[in-house]
Image 1: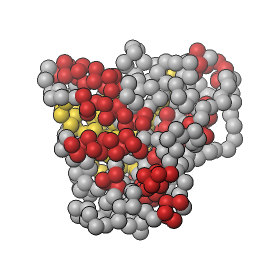
Image 2: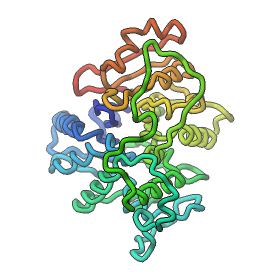
Image 3: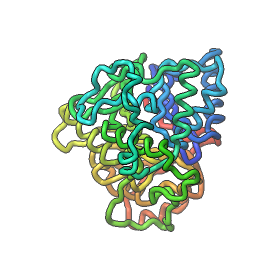
Image 4: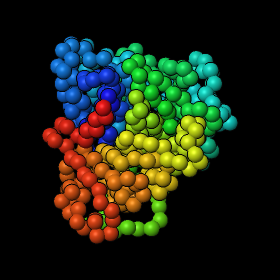
Length: 396
């Protein structure tokens, strides 16, 4: 059994993944949305404790995919306020302490990582002015909260990324060879599809610039898709594709979660090109014919279904019928019409769009479906059954 709940997290992400022989199962939490999402997550934890009849819920793994506020702040709020009712066995997060231990840019695979040498250059804040000026921040969201989470984890004695091959360093995907694979107790297999070393080094360069005093306290500009969409109904296909330029998004921990023949792609806010490349690599290592798609049971679309993070190449790299969208459209007006039209155009089977919020930005895909069907294939939709339900995908 594999069950994914995309909890209602406003414009952010908060994933509750259960697995095991039956429900209730073992739990993995990925991201925590914004501050308000912490309440949703606490209620889900309380419900899980009641389901199991236990005082303390054990979570096999907590993953913070990257440092953007709409993924990290809810986790900070949760860990600040939580008591003995929650025990996190393992935590993955690429914060400043982990990024300071990155290997050289030429590294192809994670080396044995010794304890950080205090005399070594500080990649995050100690860059020279000339290096810092060479990199303009692509996305300054979340860096203050990232340091806040790192400090909280240190204060509470929670270790990050303690497994081989990371040994306390950053979680990343080497450029060659088999991707890192972790099998959690109970049989959940997690294949790391990103970030690459290059993406993490880009984040370091941006972070050093920020900590050097070059950020703007109230950021008025950002990537185009952070400024709101100009989509009108009915959606109209547009040729051409755009690419995400956010260093924070590119640093997302992206995972392929598998158990007993079922597979879920949990992409964070990762770049489409990086995902397509990693998926093709996994498919080849598994002996699939060249160009054959990787079978999936569900795909949590990256970056809240932004058009900048979903491409034809990524869609052609997978064979999937269920596409989960995590956003209420409140801040960035996601999901983008072009992203969902690409799903309809390139999916290999009749697609189902699974929304974790029933809002004016998602509702037309159900209520005005006839407008879409004039030019595109048939599709199904699903919406939350209640205010805290989100999108739910259960695989037997």
